[in-house]
Length: 181
Image (cartoon, rainbow, N blue to C red; front, side):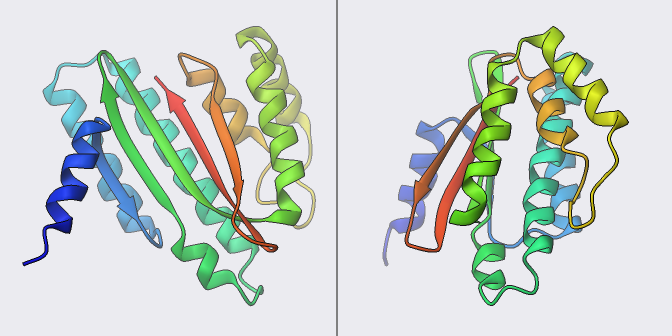
């Protein structure tokens, strides 16, 4: 018998990953994974605010992936985008990390990168101000939200968010977002 699954398990353990899901997200999967990580953290007697922040960031990251997929439903490559999602929740020492990724169209990389760069370079006070400014803005037609999700993620993060884009081909790049709490 092939031992690939045990190798994957070893790799996840070596990377300190507690929960991982790869594939198309549904609301049910998001809820179940969120509840599992909340239960895990409660069993380890983690502070309520840390549990809340990890849970909130996980929900926001998975909703961002779902929203992106939803915005591409009429695209001929929408199934490729939907199936590319991955999210991992892990622990290193006292910190938790929420690490997600999915394919994005190359035409969307610049805009997303600009948003992420602004959020990453802002301190907590600047993020609070940015969040308030975004709350006052109207959601434009075709937008999935007011752009507050990334700001909120950065506000709840203990360290600056980490992100990357790796070009896969002429159509897609793989986008990763890692948040430490």
